[in-house]
Length: 57
Image (cartoon, rainbow, N blue to C red; front, side):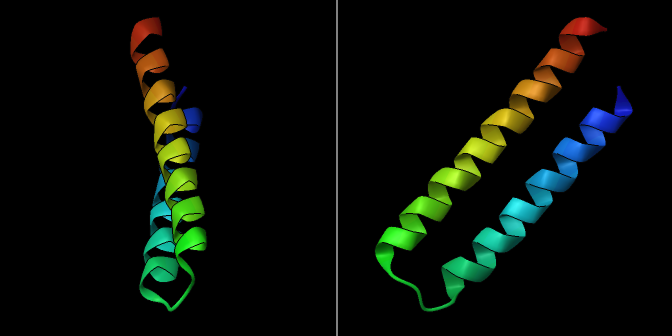
């Protein structure tokens, strides 16, 4: 149970880090939009996993 939670958390931290780095570096707007969508997807999956874990308990 905790393994999934940790994996989700690590994934979240990584996506945020990558997102910040790429956001502040000089890249095109379309890339920023794509990265933002990916981060939101990552967040959604993470939140879903956390909620699933809470439901099971």
